[in-house]
Length: 260
Image (cartoon, rainbow, N blue to C red; front, side, top):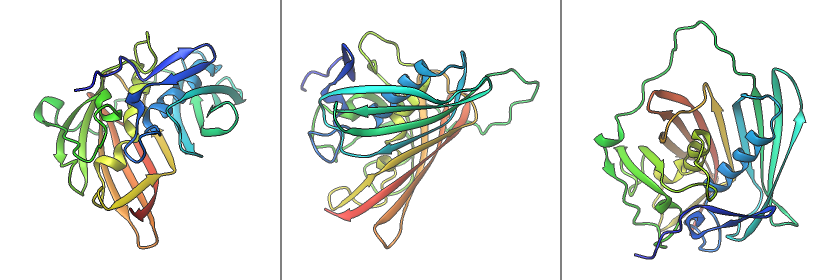
């Protein structure tokens, strides 16, 4: 097997050099949206003005295909505040904006409430290793993770429940934060729960929305995903996101659907 790069991105001054582990399934020259989403979340957390704050919602718009090339990340606080703030981050090739993220962050306070969260799916060691026959490139996004399927099948159409653990740093020399691990995974929900065969259909998401009830923890992250497709070339993927302690939030993806 071709050697796997040791990280998803290499910092180079004010740029980030993408490795082959960011490669997506539709075009070998374009990235999967998961790694860029995590990279933008990293910038948002570093730019936010509420120290020790937490992301409550983060919304990504995928404006153009993201090349496997040097990229520039910029972030700014749109709406400052002591309790809540809105932060924006953009990914560009230096000229055009390729992807944009807008997040609401809020202050983190301990409140005297009994936790009321849904339990996690069956644990990773109860599942089977994910096999992704539809990926054409040996070194690509799917090789950056360990995959454990605990519900459904990822190589056949239908809902699926899958655990992942990011096995390489998002940025070289850094330990990925749990939120980065979650976002690197979350964009794969429409792939693992594909409602149509990969070999004959395209279903490309144009956005990714994440709502959280608490910050994720640990290394293993799960998605319980389902995709529905209408008759007008539009689809919707929804997923419950969990860590080892239980559900942490939900994700949504709007899909462009077309024959290959």
